[in-house]
Image (tube, rainbow, N blue to C red; front, top):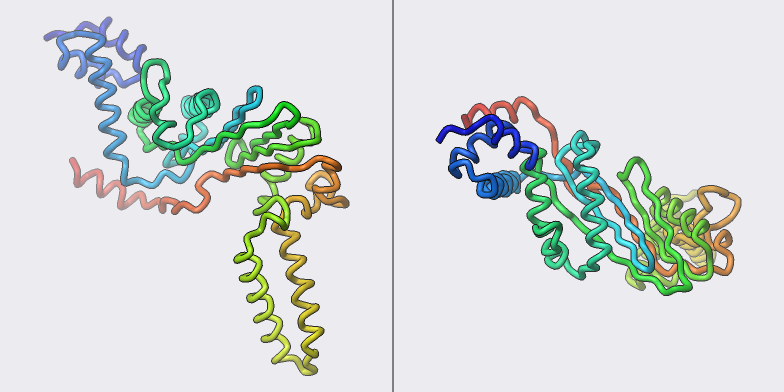
Length: 296
């Protein structure tokens, strides 16, 4: 059937899809706007599925705090260009807000959250089809606090890094400063008590082997008791670098984070860095163009 320009315009405004896609949808659905909308949704999902083999290692992290609940998320895209797009930024904020509101325990529960009549999974898939890149919710965490505890949250480098901390016995300003420190310095543990025994044992073995190797090559080898003290000293230095409360505070390097928060205690910390641990896509435009030509 012939489709009017008015209908195409209306569907385009409603969906954000391209003009030709809207025209095809209306032709396929005999001019029915609702059916055409669903048709485009289906196509958006199909496009997202075709992108499943791509690596989405760019994107944004974000936090959302309200009352006694905080959430932190990482949403990935394929390119940094898309991550700077306002539409993508709005999507990320929607994702973190609905996760905070609904407090899902698993990824499956998170993707099933209702967002204006659609699941979060479909909402993300539609955005993927519209933007033209693979978009995915990689991870999230929900934090709950007691009334006498405070959250601190901080995003760095436009959302490339986000940290959220839960602190007792302190105030929101100090908690935010601690979150800023966590974002910048990436401590692995809050305190030495949190370090697993196997990590301590492995660190000790490595340092001991290094010290013995150095000693075997020394012109004047040290006695065993001196080697032992040397290993202990290096271990303490390494552990201090791993632990939040032992690190030099980023806003005042003359004091440790533990001293800065005084009688306060960091109960929990979460830090997300975009693409952390993921393989970054290697751009090869010649191969990409060749692949596109082959598919035509």
